[in-house]
Length: 344
Image (cartoon, rainbow, N blue to C red):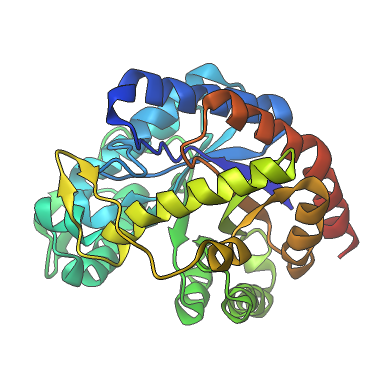
């Protein structure tokens, strides 16, 4: 099992400034490469101070310029917010400028607040995503593509230049429900997923859907992989664990507002709302702990056959603390998980 670090660009104090925010993300990417992480992931979100990254492809190119071999994954590019005729060219350009290190993770969007304000209601996002994905694949793999669908109608066009990575840049689909995981795997896409609250039954069914479909595909599915995103932060003491769990609780008071809540936002800052989930309940669902406990808790993921774990750990802590936690994970946790995965 490999490790991937999520450059999730949490921005609770908007006076911190965008230059410092994105400078921190680049520094974390450079640190991830030095410590042996396989890659980094980049979100796409607009208009809010959680997961704030309006252009993951721009950030991918910047990270590629500062690193040598790190895989750079979008997590995820929100297809319903883009015109695929323009976006396909941007993907090809990013693939070229990252020297083929880009993995295009795509999804339908998650925050109703931003989707509505950008003219794409979340109620339409599934249908828009499905057609957008088909259009994007066609534009990346074929020349002189025309379309007559519900959301796209256009005469024959060829996106230029043609992709450097053939038949198209590597692509990964974000999906949570097991039937969707099976369907996307069957189409030849890698998978990004998460059990969110950490429900063991959902986690196991997600992995089973991927593995069973790969097995049915035989050689054609051998190269396909699944990545699992979790809040994971390796602390150095019990006191730090308590502090980071509290930060996570504060983070989710904003995240829940735009993910499942009313979407109350003022001047780009999400209002923190009271949570019904206690701090103790939240701690059970996150992986915020010291190294020994973390090895035990993540061993199940390695044994289950997850190819790569995405560590989401930007919770508002100082940058120096975050870099130290990344190093603790790389030195004290990751080697054990790789041994478990190899044995499995």
